[in-house]
Image 1 (cartoon, rainbow, N blue to C red):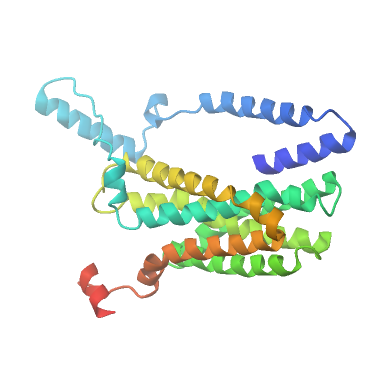
Image 2: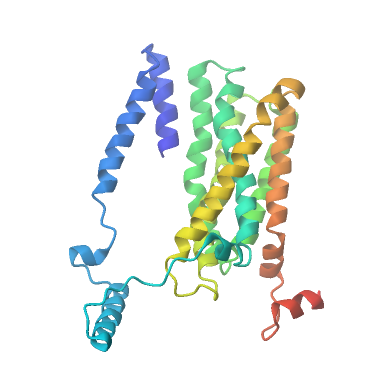
Length: 297
């Protein structure tokens, strides 16, 4: 939502002839407003007297602990897991690096689209067309989450399907990006926003929660933040390094090379998720261990 607001705000500021600093000042005020709102959020329902089933269980455990020790014990929960321990959870490392390639694709489209479109349209039109990509990203996570739940939580398979479709759109871009009119770009970028936004949003939310519920850390509610941070951090590092290649690529070989580069990123990210996709599509029979399942194949 913030992406769209900023793009539309910039287009309106430039279109009305205002000084460009207003395009920075208005989003800054919006961020301050959201910051104030965030400070007023309640972290724990118990702090405001809301007793949820989870809070009730926690309070009962705390009372039992206090009765056993005879002191005013404080329930601090299990100790947080380390990053090394998080990396040992199956598929965390693969998802972390896969997310990096997906995030790189997202960053290139988000940051470079206005520049690319500016070569064919006026700045206001280019910004508005580019904002359709961000509009598509908003329902993307909802769609991926709903579809993956519909198919029994097969999130990797759904993400792989979305990335395969994105690969096709990037191929079209590599061949026809210089020839597409505004209407075709609007439709394509909105769809591409859905295809990119869905996997990016779901990996750092539902997928991270799934990974953090692995038997090795089950019951440790402090593992989710570590897993999510690890995936996000690795993703940001990979994306920031990959972004350095875009400028030289487009200046030396043209924009078609950038789209081919993104096709490669999409393929590598999906390939890293291959073991999980295979596990979801061809689950091992009950009673088989992971090693036995791999030997059977």
